[in-house]
Image (cartoon, rainbow, N blue to C red; front, side, top):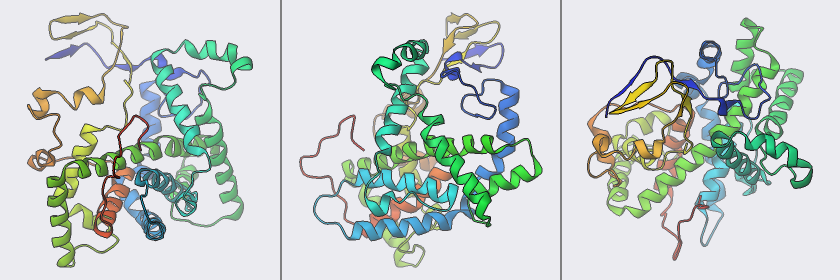
Length: 365
């Protein structure tokens, strides 16, 4: 199906809910020129080279993860620990210290707060007027949407970390330090701007990675042939000394089937399920034989695109990592770094199985 449009698609008004717009917010910034300038400003801090520089932070946490798992017995909810790990990684690479969730085996109530905030985003991206109604009813129903948690609880944590770092000094290997370096050359990049960037790390980077990790392990356990082929690749490389017990990112990159497994899991279970709305540009657009007028809000779903038979073939519903061995693929930086290290390390260390009688629900993982 062909798509023709006369210009670029701008973010729709749903990105402006809640309406408190801040100077530096890559996700909600609708002005394409400003968004490009802001993205260019911080791009180096989030490049793959920078993430590899932060690998020791992830390695230290991975050691803590396996030490914690080694102490457990009986049926273990791995999905919970994958989310604890994903959160702690964000703390480790952003602030040089994990939040302590893996060691404690508990999230201190943060997951439910984040879950509620993400649920509110799904509402507001599609029914933006509901925010105004919620604000009127808030004295009676409380903060049901938790719409401002992204710029409330998580923002306050990031802001306090910035102040603390400036007070004590130091040259820690983390994203805060890289953003400080940007601030020295670009003084317009304020502490507030920095806090919003770090808030985005926590808000967007943790839950999405946890979703991806859960998908990888679940699909492997449901597809024993794939599981066996991956284990064969990992064990052969470990036998020749190409893989250590705690796998490095460089080592993981040398495992083509491992990479294919991760890409295929992300195809079937994309972490972002929201329809990211855009406005049809001036002149409208044609989608096949249909005409869509300018100003119409449109969007696409990764869950649909990742299952189009004209792209993926008739086996689009199948978990078939081999399809990714047929061409080049890109990378996902921070998430890819931690997944590349965690997945093979746990697979080689533990005999992971689905819990007897376990059922997959919308709340799983």
